[in-house]
Image (cartoon, rainbow, N blue to C red; front, top):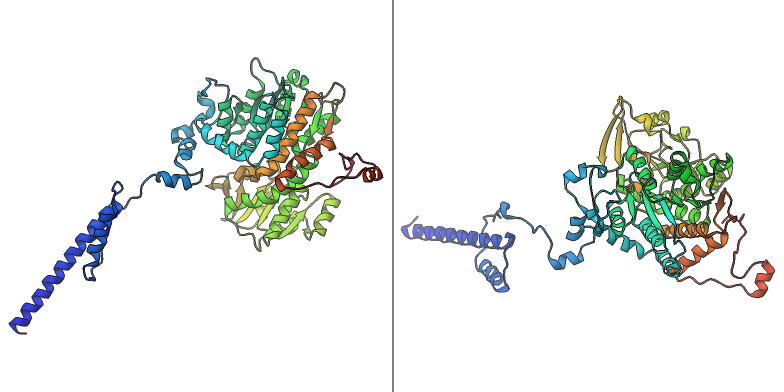
Length: 546
């Protein structure tokens, strides 16, 4: 190679090295300006950077960004926050979250005071009240019928003087009911009927307004009964009405405070389990107050039990297990309204659904709806999912759980936790592994795993949510039943269990029709006379089955 060629080659190498160095400087400047979390860059600076990059020839050397500077802004911008959902906004998470030490402390061991200076409540964290208030306001938007009832009756105060002690699920929807009762003149003290279904932020919001709430998510059995006792046994306040879901509150008052129980003016019960207990007391001649069976009202049975469960069964299973329903073999124990809703939903998503039943009428309905009616033992080894919804006890026994296949899911859609024999699984040879909230893997010695949801308690309210609109129907029914029992003249209701008057059922339904812009046809005088009906209802006899 000539001296001239050598000199030219050296010059090209020097020029290439200069370009690489300049490109690295540009990249470093661009990287620092991009990833610095406090930098603010105007359009002129940004343009100059891209111009500098464009004037250099591409080089093969890879540009490496400084990893330790790549940090995203911890909080979104003001504009960004507006576009985020309420559940992940900065204000929501601030109000909802609590430090780990607070989570480990039992609410019973904490002293909390609301903004009014009252400490007559026991919730997880009163500081969550603001977040819970937003949840309640959202629920109100889809509970227009209950809000309409509140506005119509608020001036009359039909529950003035009523002291209602309640034991229900404490969710945003039931909070709307509780605040409606308070607006109609009642004083309320409340506890939860399920140790897993309480929304802590909603309980805090109610406590902030002055409702004495004793409940939090994840109570122990001892906490559960302690909360009920605190609602009932308080100085200077004696309940005269009961709103119950499951019968635990009624049972506790009947056993522990018989003198207080005798002074109750009425009981409203909304579950199969609770109604069964009331009928047992009545049959034994021990029911000393009138009770309203809301569970068997049409507006509860056909809407809350059927349509609500048709949607919430899928929600609960998806959130906890991410299961694919298509092709899965599922057995639903019980073909009442809850069972019908569950079966319809699962069938629609391609599951192979079996049904167990003790009632030949319900069994025939299942057959006509296209389901095979079997005994649980006939398919126990092959099914992927077992769902109980009977209201009974020991529907799924330890022997049957032993024979289930690996990976099978077991859950309950009935009110009580007695349907699955969970107690029999708490033995030394079985290992419990918590894999996520409300999801346990029960592991057998041979390695088989059965997935148990919510420890056998009510799946939808323990593991997911339920449709607000349907709960509006039930809540409106409960409110009207309380008003009816509290204002009934002496002698109208004896010491027995009654169904909601048909006229009241129809009124609840009519309040909700406006949501769908539905228009009822009106009977002419001639038509009403022909059918022997009042033009304004009731339109069906009490024995009619919808």
